[in-house]
Amino acid sequence: MNILHDLEKRGLVNQVTDRENLAKLLENEQVKLYCGFDPTGDSLHIGHLLTIMTMRRFQLAGHRPYALVGGATGLIGDPSGKSAERTLNEEDVVQTWVSRIQSQLAKYLDFEGGAEAKLVNNYDWLGELRLVDFLRDVGKHFSVNYMLAKETVGARLESGISYTEFTYMMLQSYDFYKLNEEEGIKLQMGGSDQWGNITAGLELMRRMNGQDEDETPEAFGFTIPLVTKADGQKFGKSEGGAIWLDPAKTSPYEFYQFLINTSDDDVIKFLWYFTFLDESEIERLSEEVQQRPEIREAQKKLAEEVTRFVHGEDALEQAQNISRALFGDKELTSLTADEIEQGFKDVPGATVEDASRPLPDLLVDTGIAGSKRQAREDIQNGAIYINGTREQSLDKVLEESDQIGGKFTIVRRGKKKYYLLRYA
Image 1 (cartoon, rainbow, N blue to C red):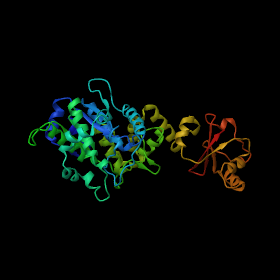
Image 2 (cartoon, rainbow, N blue to C red):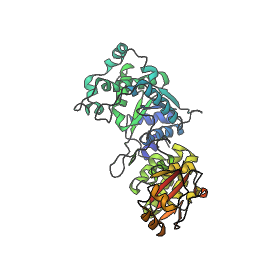
Image 3 (cartoon, one colour):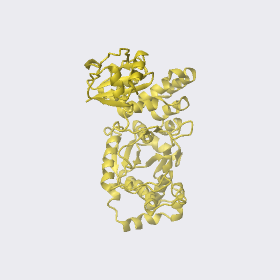
Image 4 (cartoon, rainbow, N blue to C red):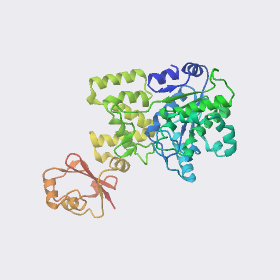
């Protein structure tokens, strides 16, 4: 199937310039395409994932993706989708973020073979531009009226926009022109909020190449949709904040759980968006959602496929182990220390310096029970579990065998209240 047809079938094409000629181009030659990622932090998040996976789809179809990390544009700030000015970061901070994001992107694309990907940084050419040359050679092709008509700029007129952010469109447009001229890139893709910047780049290219408006375009652009949930909320946020691709910021277990909790109303759309499953498999899972939603097979498949793509097979296995221990039939004592760190990252905890005390005293000292009376009642009533096993002895003293990996003891009070004891 033509890559463009496949993207449309999956619902991944929001807007596209000259669809007919782009489809022909993609059918007849290997196309170089690019997408930009500005370093606004030290990690990409799940909101970037659809763009990354779309680039990967192009690569699997035989085309060559270029991932541009905006070392220069990251110093300026994209006004797209923002109601106020971004905070400008120091250059050394931005360049550190560039390196980290390049390392992340390198995990998801193939840099060998006939459709090898390439990482580029627009600081390499924008950082060398002389202001006067840029204004004469590039700025003259942008009328203020044209820029004000773009939604990304027009939306900011009431609240205000600095000249710095106003020029962002020109810089991104020049990126497209430069990559087309030096690398032969003919397609730019991005999120739906980038449509104005992408089409501005095409217009700049046409003008600088002296091409008439009625001529067949030399380059193309398309956008993918903004990912929203059935309730209208933006995809990618949790109660704890953004879902990051960096495992140090969002653990693979948290990532897996975020996906497995996808609603029945969203899961099939997200399988089309975020997995490489074929049509027949997704249709089968759709039937399962209709006929046996309580099994949650589609959600498990979504979490499995995406966690594997982002974090790898070993991290997926860890996430599944933790999930089975907390919500399934796997013993808590089978978890490794690293898995416990992930699974119990946000539960209350305490450091134990002396475990040689009767359990009621330990429960009070670690804040699990409010008083010795409450602690004794909880133990006698069967409400206290040590590493998943009910403990009803008031004389119980935690021993070395109660330490998982020599580091932790997991205490549960009632059905759902977990506490993590760490040993000093």
